[in-house]
Structures are given as structure tokens and as C-alpha cells.
Image (cartoon, rainbow, N blue to C red):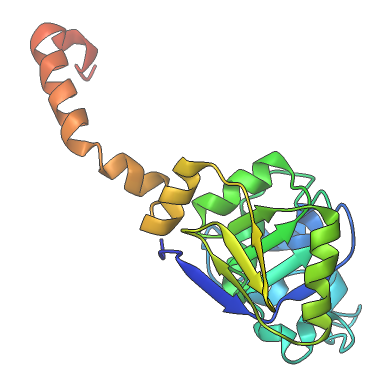
Length: 202
């Protein structure tokens, strides 16, 4: 997983509340188990009309927002089903951080496992940052300091320190398991000696 340290971008702003995972990536695109290729279908029903033609007025279809790495969203973002394809689609599109006043728990945790930083701040502050989206001005996120910089302002945000460490070091669940390979091997050797029947293949 790519390490996350700092991020600077013109943010995109979706004011809708309760954007669920089916809106993020509709069910017809869940057949793949690859983490790539889903970006083109992100927010499919909002980005394309019934003929598959791109809707020009949708923010992620317009310059410079089609290159945004930061998404500002309404509250309860990522609700609905627990599909991990939702953060996959965001990441493949280029979104590396989502800022909202609240997230669905499973989506929130899935973000960290896929290199995306979800940031919780007040609705008032989300609206304040949305002005920078409208003016097409960059904001910057410093993960190590847990700060967002916009204009001459600095906004602190709270974050679980273990999740923060995983993002900074680029560690997903597999990487965390691999760090314990030696301990796992030693445990299996002990079990093989003391309780061999537990590892015996029938």
C-alpha cells in the first residue's frame, strides 16, 4: 500500500448526505476482485445518463475536479452495504482522502485498509472548506501533524494512532500479518513439538 504523508489538491465537494456504497459504486460493477479499473464507474449513476454519456455538470466530470485527490462530502458518507469496492473505486479514480462530518463505520475502516484517509470534522468546517472547492483553491493535509491547511487557517483533526501509523507506513492487513511471520513460525514449531496432533493433516 502506498504511504500517506501529505496531500495537496483542489477539493471536490458533494453536498449530498447519506451517500451509500451503492451510489459510490453500483452493484453491477462488483463482479471484479481487482482493485483497479473501478474509477471510471465511480458515482456511475450521477456521472452518466441512461445512455452512458457523461453528465458534464456533475462535479467530478469537470476540470479541475476530475483530478481532485480530496473529496468533501455530506454527513453519513459510505452508509449501506459493506462492499470494499467503494474505497477501491475512490482510490482508482484518484481520491486519497474523504472529509465529512460522519462516516458509516465499516466504510470508514475499509478506507484505512486501502490507503484512503477519512477525516471527521464538523459540518461547519466542511462548509468552510467547500468555499475553497468553489474557488478552485488547493487545501493541504498533513497526516503526521493531523492538520488541514487552507488559506491562512489550520484545522486539527482527531485520528486513531494505530490507523495513522498504518497509513504513514503503507501497511495493509497483509503487511501487518507478514510482520508477524517469525512469531507465527515459532508458535507453529512449539505446537508441533508439544501438541503435534493440532497441526496434523488428516
